Image 1 (cartoon, helix red, strand yellow):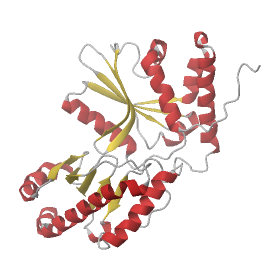
Image 2 (cartoon, helix red, strand yellow; image 1 turned 120 degrees about the vertical axis):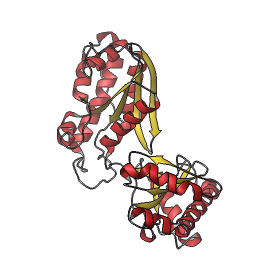
Image 3 (cartoon, helix red, strand yellow; image 1 turned 90 degrees about the vertical axis):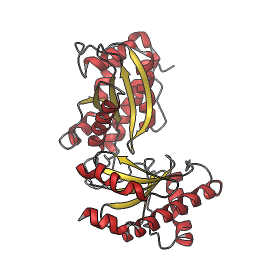
Length: 328
């Protein structure tokens, strides 16, 4: 019998996420290897505190977040995992902004951002996507090759990582492209967007939404109303979060001034808050949506969100003089 059977399934980023999460949670040698190859063993980093996957904060997602003890408080690693998917706009910068906000909130005393990816991928994107540390899959394979006590478990993990590297090399979607396109089309997400758009055309034709094309698994913000709103203002239905946001972008240092001006004009069920480094949202909470369910089962919740979006559009038009006065 072949001691190393062929691994037949197509490896995706989720498979790599779960591989790393298992090692962080259960393997002291892997944690030591990770610290050695990032901050170094003299960084006063102690025991593991938390292992978190797919963390949504400040309107964006960390693939996973790993927290360790230190003499001065908790140290948090925000980790992105890539095989061949293109970076979304400002994705690396958003990781740093989330870390800064975590420190401000007291969630940690220090943070680092890390990219796990094939070596060729890292070489391609490193000049324009700045992380604190880059860990190639090839170096992870070298680690597992030393873990003889793991037996076939190490061979399995090596096989998964090698298939990921092969996938990256054969990818037809270059990671360096300036235009973000999903590397993997998700049929459920794509169908959800299509049905959503068809519903909106009938229910609120004055709330424009572009006809959707193929969507990847990360396409969870539906943009609405851009054609009838001023530049840097858009409505987003963030359906997995349960938010419909009227989002004002590129406010910079004027974000708090904007909140102070607009907060007294909010209607029942609306809140106002910062979103990321330089945006503010007027938000209505709606039911969260799992787009992998049948659309007919989701339709009532979709309609509630679309109605909330229409309400935010009316609210903006009613108070547009405030916006134009502020922006001028």
